[in-house]
Length: 482
Ligand code: NAD
Image 1 (cartoon, rainbow, N blue to C red):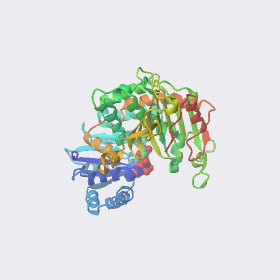
Image 2: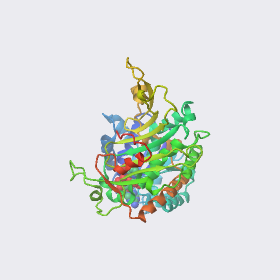
Image 3: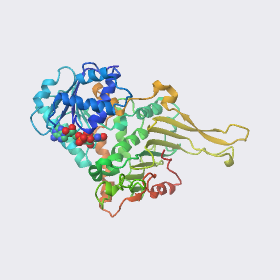
Image 4: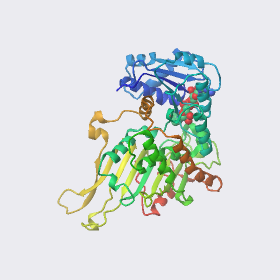
């Protein structure tokens, strides 16, 4: 279903994110017929380049990152026809009038701030001063949304000076993944799961976001951030909220976000001995190309973590007795994002321990191979007597729904279409972001004020040994990273 006509301005339109994700995503929506023919996309950035040169740049980007085997030239030309460019310095006053002249009345106006957060306030102020927005306009802001509570409050304040909360779309692209929405459908669209979704039946929950890449060219930024700020405070906490929240009364933005906020506020402070931090070592096969973390960030004394594993609790009626284990890191053995709900043992095995015993695990895989699997215990086929095996009830979309059911929509394209539709359900509200920082700040401060240094771990491993020990102390194991 096509969305309403819109004008979308991408500040930072020549940047990496715009070229790799935003514009190729828009092109795919265009090809899918979801973008109205007269939708207008305007790139804006500091660089003085002509519109023709900008269109060439984006043509190349779509060919490189479009994710389709063969790009339809006619479609690409039609898409580029509606793409403009304006040179604007977020901190200057030139270019704004040209931008205004390009924008149409009576269509949805959206402004994507794909620039450093230090420019968010400047952009908001100038959009307002130059009369480019109305009450129906939307702004989209990228991560990182602050580096602690104080900076997040400042950013929220800078935006709130010119925009209502209902106009601000804070992107966390994890929320745009198909499986994340499917997780809510599975939880709240079935009678089966929700009665078991609590401490009485769930032994523990694991959330793993593993990357195989190192810091790459982002070393300088990453070393000031670390896994806690870069991944846990936003992506992992958002996933945790969706798993742990109470059923919202309606699937509407504030009902969902109210419930997520309650989860964050119920998180207990984390004990220092429930956290393991790590730094990756050099890739033994290719140490020059893939050096150790400290070399990669050019900071031989860096105390920043490229890996974190932690145990936390949600102090509420539903979850008080269920630990949540979170783990994320770079240069691990596989790229994988997975949430696992590990159910308790049956109270008694009528088949005897020798038959084997398996716990039900509901695993929700975000990438790669998005899908949901439920491990179910059945009898091993054949004449061998009553032996129990664990088989997955596989809800992987491509298998269950055929090739048409496979999800080919990237998180960014889904979220941009939601912005145009005015649906904030999958975007973070300002108070959520602040509450998340309020929880992570004391943990990070604790490290700053201590001599604690991250433990080294081998490239292509599952992280430092201490991470496995964190689990073993509790008689549990991490799920394999595959
Ligand atoms: P980038 O450095 O590649 O691009 C920055 C863009 O901002 C360029 O178009 C540049 O011309 C423009 N710009 C810089 N200063 C400007 C100014 N004063 N006025 C107007 N335009 C200006 O950065 P990026 O990787 O595209 O990231 C953009 C934002 O998105 C950042 O906040 C980043 O943290 C965030 N982000 C990026 C990624 C990613 O994969 N690249 C992922 C998540 C979040």
